[in-house]
Length: 311
Image (cartoon, rainbow, N blue to C red; front, side):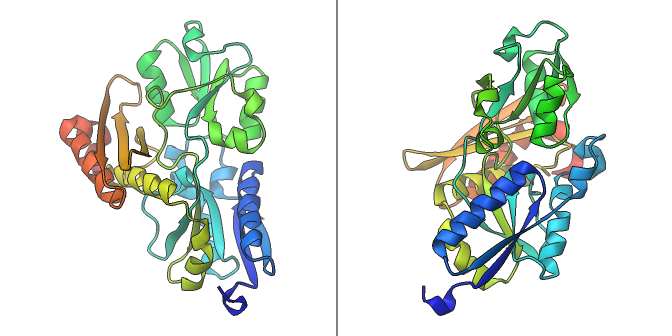
């Protein structure tokens, strides 16, 4: 790429949480390594999802509340790109925007964090577990219906603070966020993929831009990690075909093995009384078709009763 084609200034929109700013700084560093003459600026802001912490996401409008203000900044021209945890990005973006790059995935697993209990299975009956995710809640309830599970909102430090105050006996968080902030020592253990199927895109960063910005697509192309992209697109296709939102416990995880894309998915009742699982293998080149086909199989297997008329 010639100097003339290189960007001279890029503004990154980010949420203000410590984890979101780490993610934006990570992308900034990657861009500066590619374009050392470019000025890269981070414009941080608070979103509606960050402000309302006393209600579940499902009750206040869903995951889109974490990106709306960032999208306004993109649409106005104030910012060029927005960095997101991909699992927080709605499965269906507004037509005015697109995902320009999906970066290499961190650890996709859920992590068990507790100051007194090394494993979920060792908790006494009636112990208190905190999680912000219906997906996690359903999978925990499937194995341990005797536990008390309560909503856990707020940024990572806030959630850990609630645990340390004794509000919970243990909490479940994404391993990737803890690792990115150097908090791996807080992890008491990891849930295997089969134990707690991750959220679509969990552990992956996505970069959103206004649709039609061909210059940004070109500049961001070197950040794309093709294997992580294929997996994430497959997982998001599963959720999208199921009418995916934070009101429905849905898990999906894809990975490349022996040159093929393998995907697992589930739909559950929130109380864990019923969990429908399916898996499939397909071509890496057609991740969304594979994810959509698996979602249709879940519907045929009875998921329709769990997700309602949305799919």
